[in-house]
Length: 251
Image 1 (cartoon, rainbow, N blue to C red):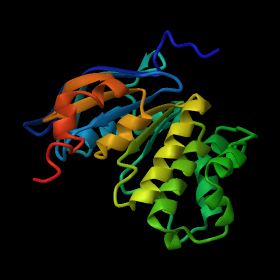
Image 2 (cartoon, helix red, strand yellow):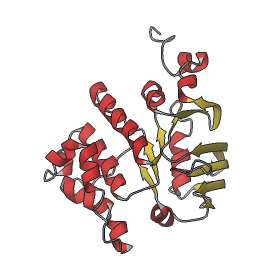
Image 3 (cartoon, one colour):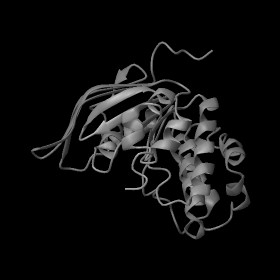
């Protein structure tokens, strides 16, 4: 049975500065095992900054302070490589695939750190990834750079899962995708709940994000303005008006 007493990720008092500009302040967020937590908000609110700070991937002019507790240990001072080795994984907005390599080789590279660590079963997630993404199995020998946008997103998530993470962070997974593909991607994200992976989702498509999530946060100008169970946030008048577009559809 999954231990729900300790969240996989527990961030509190997180602040990020770029020079003299404070991009994020007082951020506190929790993600439990098998839970999908979404952060919604407008462009420039600090959503990607939040993920990059948690992952230790801020640019050289960025400075983060606060606690980033992963599985009971504060990792705020650890370099990104050590956070990855502990089981944290970020799928960035740009996906960053190896475009000249095959789908299969991209997936194998996702497990490379496990191989270096001496894990004899470093490819044990391959069948699981192919079960989640049958299209990737069909295109196993296809060059990644020739995939459609939706397939590239599937490959980015699949490659991340090959590393067997305990915490998966997704930055705008629906960006630039057609509506039908967005629906498919979010269906797959929902299926991750059954794997036990803790999933932190950053997304502008508030409707899709809240539909698939257990809990949600609304980030505005560097601070959380609202939070609560995703189903309740989806019924919040402020969220409906500002993020679900029901009141502004004709504007």
